[in-house]
Structures are given as C-alpha cells and as structure tokens.
Length: 107
Image 1 (tube, rainbow, N blue to C red):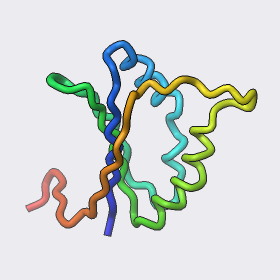
Image 2 (cartoon, rainbow, N blue to C red; image 1 turned 135 degrees about the horizontal axis):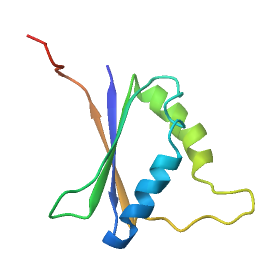
Image 3 (cartoon, rainbow, N blue to C red; image 1 turned 90 degrees about the horizontal axis):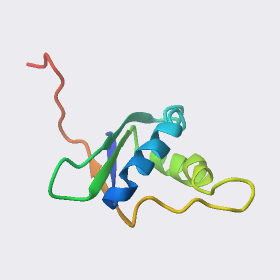
C-alpha cells in the first residue's frame, strides 16, 4: 500500500520565490530513490502562507530509507559548514496511507 507524506511549510511572502528556486534546484534528487512514486510542490493561492510538499512512496520503509539517507544529506548544506537560512519559518509532517485513488479513464 502506498504512503503519502505531506510536509506543510509556513513560508512568509518575501521567502516564497527563494523556496521555489531551492526546490527547482534540487530537481532529480528524490526521483531516483527506491520506492519513490510522486512529488508535487503546492503553492498557496489565497488565505494561507503554507506550501504543501507532497510525496508518495511505495511503502513506509522506502520513505524512511530515503529520509534517513539522501534527504538528510541534502539538507546539511555545503561542505564549508555554512548552511543557508531556511525559507520556511515552520514545518509539520503529515502522513497518510492511500486507500483509494482514481485516474482519468477509470470507470
């Protein structure tokens, strides 16, 4: 059964462009992970300052392997010991199991 992880990032308006550029620059880092199925960065349209980072995984084990490996390495910053300031002021991780889904053309 697939699992979905949604990281809810609180991003002030003046940091939105930076956040989106950082995600664009990391393109390809998660896509090669074993068990990875889907990624979307969802920008708020109105009424909130929360971005949703949506990932879907074949299993919880696949997600944990990526999280404890490549994801942690990717968030440690450059080799000079200097980490860039986060664009988000807060985050919360939500987890779900996929129990139903539909695609175009499903009857």
